Image (cartoon, rainbow, N blue to C red; front, side, top):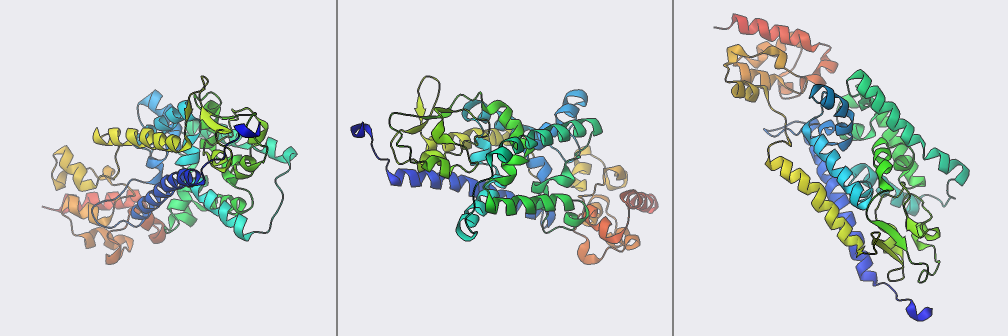
Length: 393
């Protein structure tokens, strides 16, 4: 039996980890930058908000899209495209979106690594508590999807930790996303103690993907003949699955991250393979996850369906072929600024801003953010702009 055991190449294992972490950190960094550019708008490029760049937004909008042909407010086609990409990945590799792309999952893993280094050692969550607690996320999924579909709006947004993360530098954090900020803080502190704390117990997107993960084409399989029962795979699993006690890891809790495979010291004791025994390396799972997910993003972007930036009022007027005096003031939205209105209408920005206490250095800030600080309502500003337009020659 000992002659059948071959040690894995440590360099190959490190390379697979680096590729996975390279993708995770690239997505997290890009998402963070887009979030900062959205909340602190400057220049001509203004990215859409986090709700339009999250696959869960596509799921939240699905009912409205089917019944009315429209997306919920703040959601765009991009969310639906990301949802479709995530579902395709589930059918092939399981929850590889969770384990190789999700930026909130990456944040939790970073805190998990910090916890292992700086937090005193502690035991695992007792099995009698851990197992039933994992079902909580399915309840979270059901409650928010049914509530959203019934209300016809993004009711989860105030509770969304990822939306809170994207607004850490915005005044909206305390006014609209305070609960989400608390949940984000709890998820990261929890991850210092137990890896992927939010993923395990509360993530509705993870719960949705888990519904189909059991039926994915490729799964992690363990060769009992070469396994040396070292337990390295169990220790490495960020969601605390007992990989060493199974032949085929078909648990919906598996996030398809490949950490168990890279931790295994024996060649082919753990592999990703399909029902026929066709094997694919962990590094190739990362590569195909990237190609499938971002291939769909690239195709829909090229087709003009996936929008990355918001359209200013002036651009909407130009598209409609209307002059400044024909601006529909109902098109003025909270994400627009005084400068947007002035550019579209030709009005003096000072005249637009004066009744609402908006300072000159705030002309480029979104009205939705300013109205909380200055205490005005959007309908009042629209009526004021309408009056100014009627007075202009």
